[in-house]
Structures are given as C-alpha cells and as structure tokens.
Length: 136
Image (cartoon, rainbow, N blue to C red; front, side, top):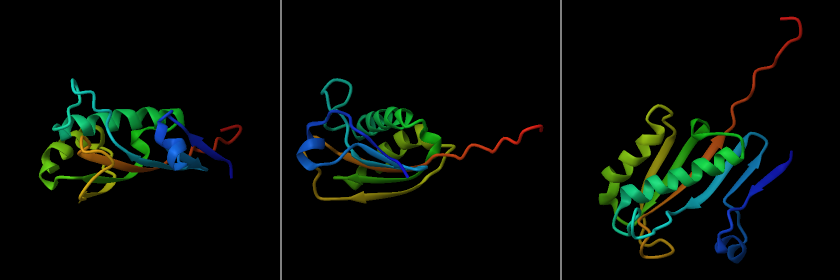
C-alpha cells in the first residue's frame, strides 16, 4: 500500500523526524496537534479557543487527504489541567456532536511549551466508496 505523508512546515517536523499525518490505505493517523497561540484569538489561558484552533487545523489536514472530520473514529485529548474538561468538551462537540468518535481525556504534567493547554491526536478511516456495477 502507498504511504502518504502530510507535512505542514512546522519546524518540529524536521527536528523530530515526524509529519502531521500519515495515510496508508484508508487509515489516517494525525500526530498530536497543539494550537497556534497568537495571544489575540487564541490565548494561553483559553482551552476552548485552543481546542477549536486544533480542530480547524486538523480539519484542513484531513481535507488534504480527501477525508473529513466525519471519518474520525478516535481522538485522544491531553491537557495540563483536567479542570478544562467542560471548555474542551464543548469545543470538541462543535465538530463531533453527530460523529461521536471514541475519545480519551488525559491530564498530563506538561506539554512542549507552557502556553499549550491542549494537545489532540486523531485516527480516521476513510469511508469506502461503494462498488458501482455496470448495467445497474
């Protein structure tokens, strides 16, 4: 099966030797993704805005692989503060209310930089296209 790597230009991709997402066949794995904290729309103390930023960015990555958020079957959410649950859950639901992937919500001691409150990993499976039979 063909392997397709999606790179986003992050300096960490070369530094660590990873890519944002990998697709092999109909399976897509998306690396842990943090928000782009700009201090204006996405602030270091706003878990809801960080989660929305992550979800929007990953939505674009999935589109580049010809799949969508509807194809996500699992998310893994890491936070540095378990008390952000309501804010993160609310943002997660804006994308997944009807899809309902499996998920986990984990408190960890730190992420790669102190301004990050949330990091999310994703697994998606591209829906198979139905076979078209000639003459039907």
